[in-house]
Every structure is written in C-alpha cells, then in structure tokens.
Length: 113
Length: 113
Image (tube, rainbow over all chains, first blue to last red):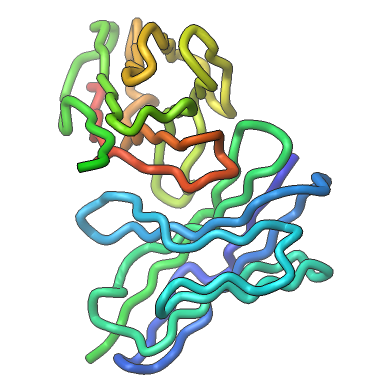
C-alpha cells in the first residue's frame, strides 16, 4: 500500500524567504503522480503542483517548485519568496495504479512578517 | 466558472438520522470522489466513481453509500450516522482520474451527536 510521510508537523518562515516542505513516499507502482495541495484556514483544498514519476524535469508553478528525487522517493515542495498568504496547511499526495490517492498528514506553515 | 459545489456546508444531526450531502461539478469530469478529513490524519478517500453508474470503495467506505446517476452529481449518503462520522467532508472531481489535478468542493462540516 502507498504511504506518504510528511515529517514536519509545523514550519515557520520569515516573509520573503524560501521554505522547503518535506514529503517522502512509498509505492511499488512504476508509474505514479505526486501532488501538493494547500489548505488555508478557510478550509478549501487548492491544487499547487504535480510531478509525474517519468518527468525528468522538476515541476515548477510560479513560486512553487517540486524537488523530485526518485531514488530517494522524495517530493519536497519549495516555496520561494514566502508571502503572508502562504500561511496554510500543505498536503503531499501520491496516486499510482489504483484510483485511490494517498495523502500525507500535512505540514502547517506559518509565515512571519 | 469551473467549480465543485457541496451542500450543505455545515450540518449538525443526531445518531441514526439518514442524511445526504450533495456534490455537483460543472466541468464534465469523469472522476469524482469523496474524502473525509480528520485532525492529524490528512484526507482519506471514502468512495470514488470513474463514470456514471461506476463506483468503488476507497480506503474508508464503512457507513457510507454513494450513487452516480448523472455525470455531474455524486451524492454521499449516510444511512445511519454515528458520532465517529463527525468530520470534514470533501467532494472532488478530475478529468481522467486521481492522476490528474483534483478540483475540490468547499467542504461540509458534519457533526453527529
């Protein structure tokens, strides 16, 4: 069964600095996708970024990038130039051969002014 | 505007009183799913549907039912709710399955007393 581990329950970062949120995954699937979602205090889930297991380049979406290290089974999210609005819960997720994605337990990010 | 809607947003009910949470998407997505979110546990999938009349169990299906009679709608039914079903519920949809970006509804906070 797939498993997602987010080892950082909470992270703090100063505004305008970069921050890395860790995610490791465990899957036996050869082909899979990795996702990051953001959940602000208002509660909605917002898609941030996607990385396919066969993608050679790390995914980037604006200030978000995914540091994909396949051999280490890690898919860390890097947020550059943090903003106050980045304060939220962040969830890593993996989806492989089944139709049931697996989510991590989340990391709470607080951005200080 | 592309969106997933859920109703109601908040619901307080009593043990054993049947309830339905509606979910509708306007993006003609084939894949729809239901998740529950509990503190410290991330999101866990309850049921999913790959298309009309095609549904299957996720990780935590006990105590829930779903139906998919129309492509746009995917209601979640709790025939006899119990307090352990108190949770935040999300409906989500995607174009081709969980390997694609999922669009989430705003969530339904359910309390069963």
